[in-house]
Amino acid sequence: MKAADGDMNRKCNIYEMNDNARIEVEAATFRRLLEHLREHVEVQNIDLMILADFCRNCLAKWYRTAAQEKGFEIDYPTAQEIIYGMPYSEWKAKFQKEATPEQLKAMEEIQRHKEAKPEGG
Picture 1 (cartoon, one colour):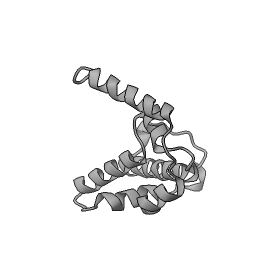
Picture 2 (picture 1 turned 90 degrees about the vertical axis):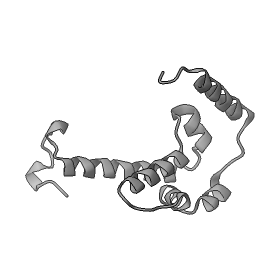
Picture 3 (picture 1 turned 120 degrees about the vertical axis):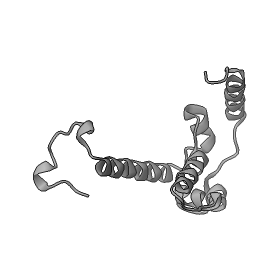
């Protein structure tokens, strides 16, 4: 849905958006995130996990869960293909690098920190 020509430059309070407009903006943002991740294959999943505590596989799991909540059956490999833009095995063969000792150490530290955190904290 596109705004009328006169509305293109109108400043909008996000709270004025109706649900459909908000969903369209969120969907466009998500598509742009996927495009960005597909363009930047040099950013490894482990880097994303270290920096942001999520990766492409997390997005695939969230996508699958959201689809299932809406009544659509989707398996994990299909969700991964939607996120990666190709089968995961193909992406992995083309772009995934061996984790460095530094990356593995950082992930271990994150896991230790998570395990030491009290429930809900």
